[in-house]
Image (cartoon, one colour):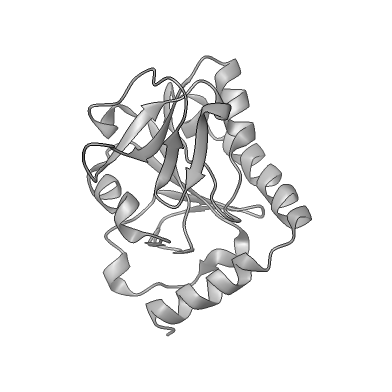
Length: 188
């Protein structure tokens, strides 16, 4: 079995080499799958992420969810504390993607007091396994949220980011579903 560092390095290398055409096509396919999922369609409050680097894009999910009057929240580090909070966003032009979530440049509608107000949380990552374990870019960003979150956790990933098994230490930060351009994986 590859070590956590070996998997991380291999995936980061592949992610950096992705062509724009692949990112656009795969992201579109992934977002279409998510829009058809009952877990997503029945959600009112959704936690999204703003893609950083070559992560799966989420702009279609924002647009379609906004049309259906869903509340969309994005993670950002609090300015006064170094902890992750979710902020309601109504205009994508008011956010700038960063490694640690987003930087908000416009008016904040609402900050969630508790991430468990969200029905569903969509997360990015570097690699995922069939058990729902997640290896992230900045593991501390979502770890606390994934530990405590009671809603549905959905990871968006390219199919090459799926490995048969990640090291056991990563299994406690699980997602319920992983959606790729080729399949939907329900954690086992």
